Amino acid sequence: MTKTIVITGAGSGIGKATAQTFLAAGWNVGLIGRRAETLEKVAEGQDAALAVPCDVADESQVGAAFDRIAERFDRIDTLFNNA
Image 1 (tube, rainbow, N blue to C red):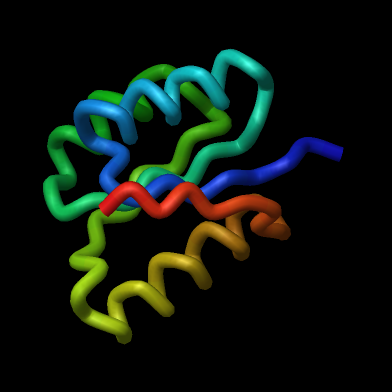
Image 2: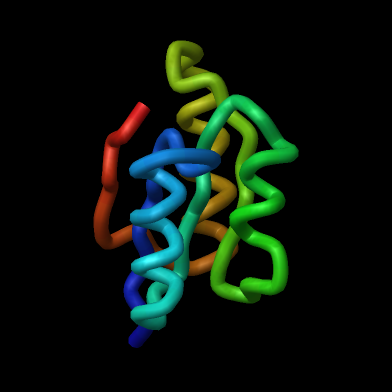
């Protein structure tokens, strides 16, 4: 079964590099960040990536983001909290 990782701050820098590494390794990747445009660029062409714009300072947004990712990939195995 394919594993799923959620990466906060996934639109740039270390978060983006981590997302690309896990996607290349065959993982499903939930991409969380404030800017939809940068997340979409990371996810572009990757069926295993889901871009979810979210402000991690807002608890309700975080809950909704995790629910959306779990619904899409059926599970969350790992969190890389980079925000």
